[in-house]
Image (tube, rainbow, N blue to C red; front, top):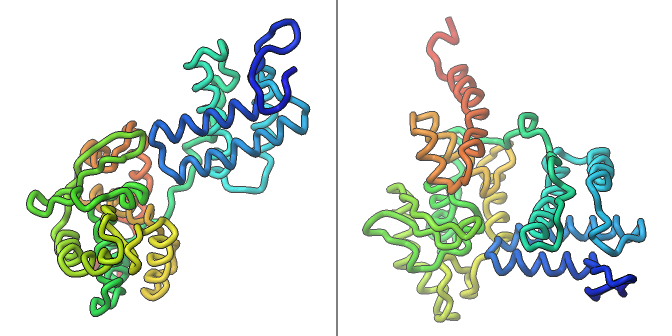
Amino acid sequence: MVKAGKQGAGRGGVIVLDVVVTIAEFKNQLKSQGYAASTIEGYSKNLDLFRRYLEERHINDIRRVNHQFILDYQEKVMSESIAMESKALKIRPLKRLFEYLVETHRLLINPTEGIVETCRRSRKIGPVLILEEVKRLLDQPNLSLRTHIRDRAIMEALYSTGIRLDELLSLEVYHVDLKDKVLYIRKGKGKKQRVVPLGKNAIKYLKEYLAKIRPWHARKNPRQRRLFLNHSGLAMTSANVQYLIRKYRIDAGINKTVSPHTLRRTCATHLLQNGADIRYIQKLLGHKHLKTTQAYTKVMPVEVKNTHDKTHPGKDL
């Protein structure tokens, strides 16, 4: 066998796919393909867990990993006291790694073939805000403060368009077209581009932010082209956005977990409730498969029932 960190021929001239080198190469491949930083971070973390699992079993050649080995690893993951989605996130990077190795002709057989991450039917859909909660959340920023006008613009954009957090953070100034009332998503998931419409409230606050707030923040860093900046002129980070939404959620007295993805889910659900075609929502959200979008239909009946129970005039008869 070759030493860890090197790739080449082992005993008898057999090519060895060193685990450490192969996983590092795959991580670099993800970067070159334009995967979101958060996705790469998650994949890296879980691939490193798998690497340590291999090391404990003295396996440094990835060609020694067969289907039964993956099944054993999956059984270990499934026995952990974590959410089903967290278990899926530990298996998914392995499937992508071995798919990559087959596609690049390093392996003939994919040992993860037929492995199911989790039963998607049993996956719980995260919380969705009702309209009244959305209004309370959006009303929290103090519009006499520059950063709060920016925060309102961020939340309005997330709710109006349903874009992902990484897509929001990748937006540059010229990606906003207030005349045509759209955002150009140049760095969507899987390097896909799309155009999403902006609602009138999102346009209102983005216009104010671009005219009055961003120039003030950008004076310290005039070359920065990212749309949303902090008070130092640096591009906003995912931690910044998650923090401000959490803060306003608490201020609004909302007892649900609220994140940027909650606003994405809420946008889709409200469109469904108001009769939008699911294929339109699929294009808006940038989903590759319609079944991904259809997961939101699991939320809609519950939200409609809750609204009916609270507002139907016959409830007090």
